[in-house]
Length: 547
Image (cartoon, rainbow, N blue to C red; front, side, top):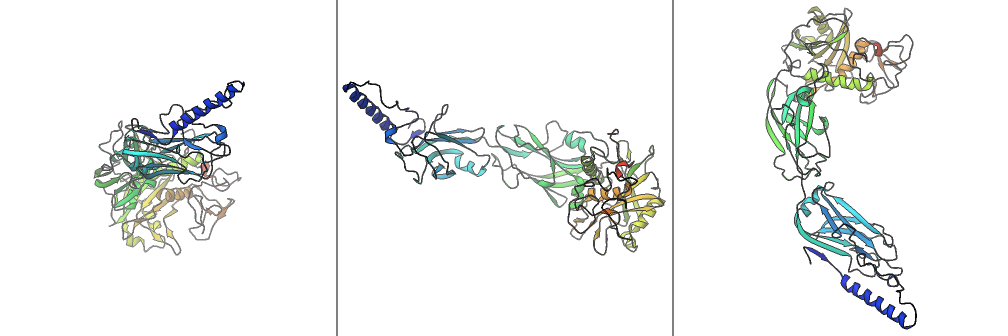
């Protein structure tokens, strides 16, 4: 045993026997007057190749040291990889056997049925990134042993060369994930609430800026140490938000000091838990909550604290003066006596609009809705309604008196569509009504409703899609001349399509997820039906030149 390495078997005795055999054969040939040149090639001691006549029809599996290796087992403590090598030095195929790597007698990994032809070698690599539980078996001082065909399945000439072991202190470089802000960002801590300028350092227009709850996950450790897969969650406002809800900058090959930014639109926090009122918000952040990443320090994966929710904008009680033209004006209307959840100033409406814009831009080649802005931000009007929710519930269509009041109180520009968020939901005879589009004195109002249940969670949670659907009604979708038009007299199912349940304007009994904008372009957007309303021509949509 030299420097912790130990070969097993009778390799030295085999070399001696081979040398003696070759010498005797040469001597005998010389005495008979034949050339003393050996009849068989000189065996390669590195490869342990026995004379052919000794292994005819027999496999001989053995550990193998490839060029550049120091032993049949090598390892890279930075890349977290262990490599093993073996060979078949016989003249028959080796099959139906296995290769085993153990640590102190405990199984680390098993390769089953690695077919190996005569005279062939094979290398296998195991990455501890792929099997994080194996860290415990190989980190620290251990004896690693490579065993070829431990079940003796393959008939062999010599089994003494089927194993190799080494003992040493292993120090694989483990990653460490912990809460942390991006180095170049102006974050007060690992968790922030703000627009895209604060979260991403990206200064978007008012309708695209959004508002987010964001946190950073800092990576510490060797650059090759893998920190994936990850699953994080954050709890705020009595609502736990899991990994799949987040937009994030994600790179599975992080380098030292990198920070992943995970952000969720604040409207999801507003609809998911308690009312999101301005001020201090308690949070609990859990990094790698499923412990999928084996880390050097698991104790810093949880952070509890307080983050400040400040106004996203100043509250406005009227439509600010503008240059005119076709725009969509956002409104937050609250019934008399109802809780003001501050959607106009806590970032909820701004983040809904940003999500809505993103959805639309991805399907229109970059065209979004033309929103009413003031001083570079969304111009959102707050209205405290004269009627209470109970009073509104007495109307057959509760949104109609709201539209009348909004019109009467100055939201009556015929060039504008008013996008109204109202915390009041009406349940129809067979469905929950989460949105509606109506007109009052030829002025369009698109409503998106929301309402809390007894458990404080909201119903009507798909706010961006709901509002976008109602706005497209205001833009003219879907006209009776559309190929897949569906309508029911005096029904909220009027002016929809029925061909694709995944279409934004679908109405029907089939389940779908709104991911299509006029699938097939044969109904309401970029169609070629003469004389039929095409929302692609709507003045409320940006032209490509405007972008």
